[in-house]
Length: 279
Ligand code: MG
Image (cartoon, rainbow, N blue to C red; front, top):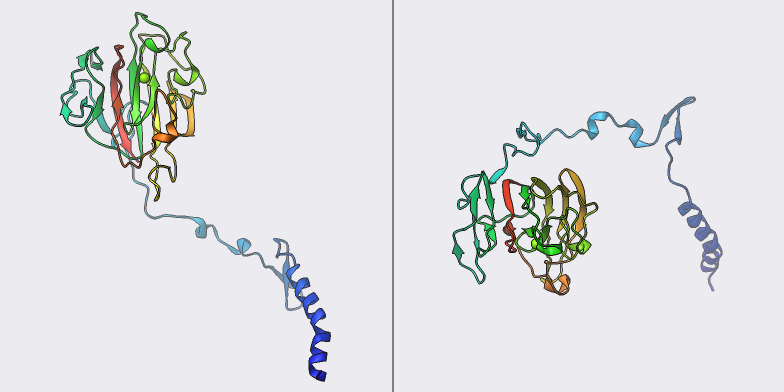
């Protein structure tokens, strides 16, 4: 073997050790400094040299929106879905298998009310991500029990039911009471008012996103709900479309923006002051 090769092999362990030592050097710390000249020392950490301007973002300016004079009323950029008078400008009866039909719910005292024999109603518009405010009232005269007392529901994108029910001292299954995402998530608390009193839901909805697979979510629908001002659903991830019987996950099908649907479940339930903000 040539002398130069033997010399190289002798050096190799030393070189390797040197490399390991270098890799084990700890990263520079906030306190580490460098000597400049004889006595002056300046910090090496770049965050110490930053100015406050470097972390301020000015553009684009956040748009101003005029809030309502009273909390619960629509702000300036809201779409009014029901103004207490006209139902057919924004709503239509939900017809199975397609087609349209005028809504036949009655208008009474500035509210629209589901009537037995009519169908569920849905918005003519479709929505993706949104903030929805909706006020509802079950009858003051208590009839029925469990799921048969003031049953209705707000379906988000026509698929995901936020239950409406008279849950004031009315036991039913917890994932089917007022404020539940039906058969998926019980509300955190029962914030129900007495029957005959107006109640409200404030809903923040993020629609699902889909990838190549049309039968699973890339990101699921996420929802936060306040019932009469109390947090009852905290950014929950829905498992799939609402179903009375069966497994929601099996029903997932790729979809885009969808309607808001109000359920007609055989019980008279009134609605008023419905507005939505697209996000
Ligand atoms: Mg219902």
